[in-house]
Amino acid sequence: MIRSDDYYPMPSIKSRFHKETDMKMTDLKRRLRKDRPKTVVSLKLPDDVIADLQRIAPLLGFSNYQALIRAYIGQGLRADLERESSHAVMAHFKMATRKRRRPLL
Image 1 (cartoon, rainbow, N blue to C red):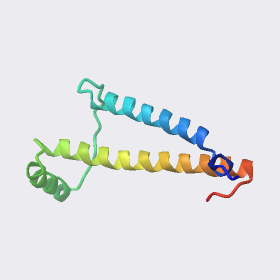
Image 2: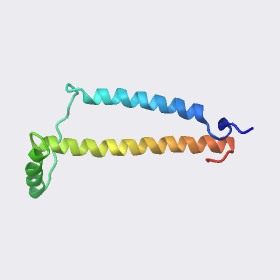
Image 3: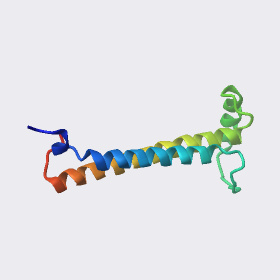
Image 4: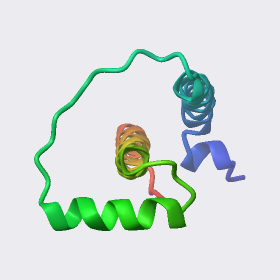
């Protein structure tokens, strides 16, 4: 009889998934705090980009263009972190299946 455990290293992936989910929730709660420390950063952007940001910011519900820039940076960063996380999980899965010499599917 073939069991799913024979093909999928579920316990390690499940435990890793729950750890990552817990860490994501903890990280998200920390990131949503208003009193997080901030650092001043200076960027040189073309004048036309600043003008576009100033024009678009109120249309998107932002109080100023700096808040829009922060939102853009946050979106890109979250997407990259998610991509990095999913690559790490897949790499772990592939490594576990290689060690057991079992097919991925």
